[in-house]
Length: 124
Image 1 (cartoon, helix red, strand yellow):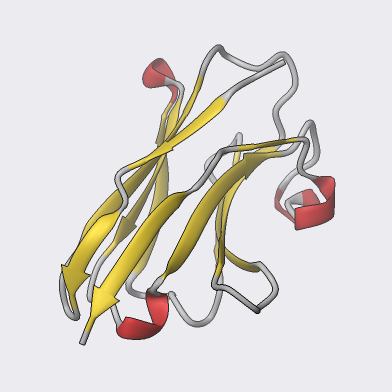
Image 2 (cartoon, one colour; image 1 turned 180 degrees about the vertical axis):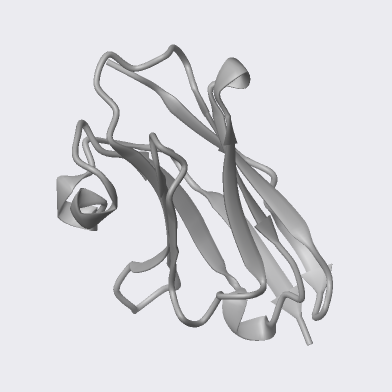
């Protein structure tokens, strides 16, 4: 059992920045990747970014060049740095981890633990 704690959400004006953090309660026995998904009411949850245990990353086209995912293993934390935020980035952001596999296995249905979410609101 691993608890993932999302933090760092908030409200910002368009063009601003926020950094989300996803901290594990302990170093998981099995870990393939950590990813971020986001969801707005009435819509499906969508992929944002992921990072595997080798440090390889993947981004949704909508956030490429603006968001960066990275990790601090000593702190058991994965960060999502979000720059040049847009109104359409407004959503609840969730982090999750997979039990194994690399980036190809970092898909929503394969994730075994999820954080409770951080709300991001971007005003235009």
